[in-house]
Image 1 (cartoon, rainbow, N blue to C red):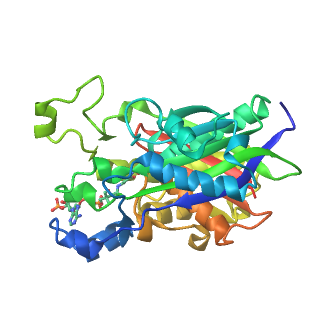
Image 2: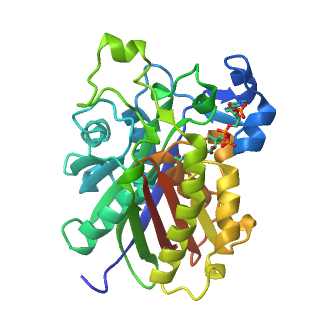
Amino acid sequence: MEGVRVGFLGVGYFVPPKILSNADLEKMVDTSDAWITTRTGIKERRIAADNVATSDLAKEAALAAIKDADLTPLDIELIIIATITPDMQFPSTACIVQDKIGAKKAACFDISAACAGYLYAIAIAEQFIKAGIYKNALVVGAEKLTAITDWSDRNTCVLFGDGAGASVMGKVEGDKGILSVYLGADGTQHDILKLPAGGSRLPASHKTVDERLHYLKMSGSELFKHAVKIMTEAGERAAKIAGLNSPQEIDCVIPHQANVRILNAVAKKIGIAEEKIYFNIERYGNMSSASTAVALAEAVIAKRVKKGDIILLDAFGSGLVWGAIIIKW
Ligand code: UT7
């Protein structure tokens, strides 16, 4: 429906309290605080307890966002959870979260688009609301990445953390809300970041466990090259579709937090001042679909994003998948 603007009615986030610092990692694998800090920007990350699953993190973020929107769980009509670490293969984590928060009237499903998952979920919710099918949608990016982290692999274990970010979306008045959405994918690169076993290709067996195939595998430097190029192009495309005259009109960039070096390179290429990028990677590491969701909620709560600001969400991840969204706050 032309003319219907969709925006954010409320935001919230939750990260588990336990901190794993670079100094802690130095005791676990052959690494150093200096290497991790200079190569990634990460100083510490949050680790969920053994008895905490992705839905538990999502629940806390969801309740905070619903409260921020001045709604109750019973008002929620659709729940989309973006995650690559669902509680289990099925049912969807969205159904489990529906139960945990008592959002009995909501339709529920998960989507798997890795680090761009929160942006894909926002794009889907926008369409449901625009089409008049639902009045609102709860969109959550939630991950317990430490459940699929190989703590003996220094190439990956220093990078990831756990957390959840949520937003309630709905119709908004005036000129605010989502101005443009650009999504993309390149399945030819599906091999460079993956969880090899546990699906229909390699069901769980003693062999898959012995070979450590239930842990995330990543070709970091390959991804790095793609990330800079793709996040730059995606950001520029979204800005163009939104009708911005120049990227300088963007007040704040809320990117997927994979690596400080990637984000600085993207900002430079797009022509946006580094001060406009919101970083939380130093405190949380890479939380896949939760990264952008938590960053947006934090930036709004900290008033780093203010009414009327133009913001760019820009994310990239396993698939490969990517997305960029321009919002007038
Ligand atoms: O969120 C989804 C998308 N994810 C990404 O976009 C991640 C993109 N990739 C990256 O951020 C970077 O590639 C990494 C941070 C993962 C790695 O940084 P890099 O500068 O690309 O390092 P590298 O993989 O080329 O490794 C350089 C060296 C290697 O040693 P040699 O072979 O040169 O002797 C690694 O073994 O650094 C070594 N290394 C480490 N050293 C200390 C790798 N991990 C570590 C470590 N501590 N934790």
